[in-house]
Image (cartoon, rainbow, N blue to C red):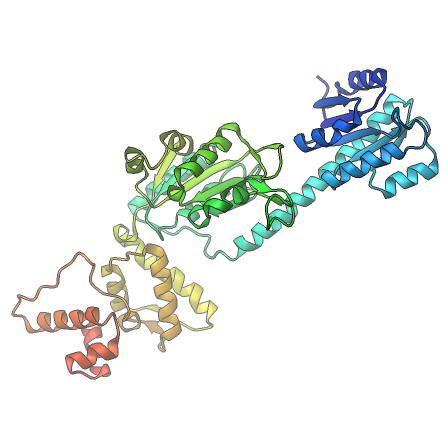
Length: 459
């Protein structure tokens, strides 16, 4: 079977015999051939289809020799789609008219009756030009996305706990497929890192990864952000803009915090996923999309279905495979290596020399409940490095953390003096939100004395 590499072609000419002959020739080489004898239908056809090339007659019945009608419709086409690839055809062509046509936006100029080989060669060159236009647009949009992605730190996933080994095993199995993945876990557990790891190990890893925070998109901007818009579609639409689905074409689309979507927005998303196509706001053209979909949420999405706040059919669409990311408090074995990892990063960033963390610091970090998970640990290490003065971080450098998990009660019934003192110090620190000066004053101690006791008790 001959490869149809000429894309979608529109031929506009008032000669029905010519239209029929052209269609018979080109349908063997083009994906789709549309013919039209009435040029007044051109705006409708251009607005509702994605043609790769337009073959446009220069002379219609109202004006058979001057070419003015052809130039008029060329201008109309270019107003609708400035990047349209148009080849003008005429039986009365000359060099002067050809030059004028090129100046006004035509891609090429061909005389009729044409030679079939010449027409096919001209169309082939035009198709390559159209592909280059599309590639430039896509690269421009992707460049903006990639620049934003470069600001995202720490692409590595770190973990040696049993729960994380299970996550790694699932990633290895699912990455090579195109199965949709739903990642569940609390805020700060690293859901986006898991999504990027799946993309990096997939067959789409040479294509773009596009992440979208669904929780940050307002109802009014949802369609514009995801599906794109045409210039003038609404007040602030000052230029054509590709949506995130278009940007992610052939790559991976990551929809974070999908549980935050309202029911109407869930319906719009489901429609796009089912049809595998999107339509920009202000356009009637449907654009096919080919994406690998990964979603994430920190919300109890299965409970939300029972409460009728999340569509069951949408869940079926997005969770071919589910990955649960455990909270950091359930990954005790990972805290030391994560802490050392962040220490190296921020020591380099702030040009400080650190040998590592002292035992007291490790003890404190592993006792803390980490309600903010890995993100909180990352920020804690950064803050400690900025404020620390020694060569190693110790427990005093993390005075702003509560050393006790939220669900662990302090025992005040013991008669052991050291235990009583330790508990009182802890209560004072908690009461004063980690402010050492205020805690010391309340305990009747100097800051230095309190620091010595923090070191003694590993707080």
